[in-house]
Amino acid sequence: MNILAIESSCDETSAAVITNGKICSNVVATQLIHTQYGGVVPELASRAHQQHVLPVVDKALNDAKVTKKDLDAIAFTKGPGLLGALLVGTSFAKSMALGLNIPLIAVNHMQAHVMAHFIDEPKPSFPFLCLTVSGGHTQIVKITAPLQMEIIGETRDDAVGEAFDKTAKLLDLPYPGGPLIDKYAAAGDPNAFPFPLPEMPGLDFSFSGIKTSFMYFLQKRVRENPDFIQQNLPDICASIQFTLIDILLKKLKKAAKETGISQIAIAGGVSANSGLRKSLQELGEKMNWKVFVPAFEYCTDNAAMIAMAAHYKFLENDFSDQTVSPMARMDF
Ligand code: ATP
Ligand code: MG
Ligand code: FE
Image (cartoon, rainbow, N blue to C red; front, side, top):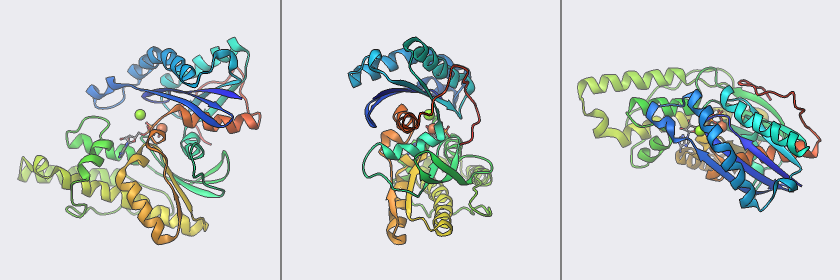
């Protein structure tokens, strides 16, 4: 059984082929055009998806040594994401499924980030918790079976990836700044500049206050010393990263305690952060958790995770018809 999956929710055009539950190819074209604007420009993202979708799909089929005739279903990201970007992948998948007369599978992008854990060994068993941290979301998800998921905590304002990227912008680092903060933090002291942690009840998060306090901190220090950022970049990045990770892991610890679940996973673009990966491993050893960290290629947006989610949907005959349309906001 071969499924072609297409991801186009933001600024990665990606296609993957999954055969009997095994990923056979995963092609990702990252749109570099947005760097010069300091963030993703939706209209430019849609146009770049239009340009990339055909060659990316072709390459995914070639890499997997699968022809169109061998396909049993076409999967695509239905949402959440940028509507114009989603429309490209959705329309492409619908036309291809119609042309080949095979079923269509609509996938939720945030569920797919979690399903990335079923691509490689070791795979978590059920139930497990997943901290999904990305450019647009920050969620603690409880998973009881494949695609049976419940959000038990989430951000009430900004996503943690957004906090990384916006702080990086204040430091004059190019978009997306998250990976650069990670890079500079490696050589810095995480305790150089302490920041107050937000107070948020339950398992929910807030990152807008901390973003503002980074901004005031930098403005004040730069007023005192115009070269403050250049002279202290590693320490600033390490301190910011330490604070953001601390917020995430405190809530994760609380969620594990409240649910009694000790299999803990992370997913989404920010799960590529080396500080988060290391701190989670350390906390896991201390708490006696079984920790699951995805391979780097499956952290940021990719179609392999869409394909993995689609595989389980196929097994349950969970198909969509030609009236399906993308959704910018979408619950599980
Ligand atoms: P969503 O999944 O919420 O729709 P998205 O698809 O844009 O958002 P992803 O591609 O999953 O997000 O993740 C992108 C985010 O991950 C960006 O904010 C980026 O800065 C962040 N990111 C990627 N690598 C790292 C890293 N090493 N450290 C910190 N942040 C990182
Ligand atoms: Mg992206
Ligand atoms: Fe994503």
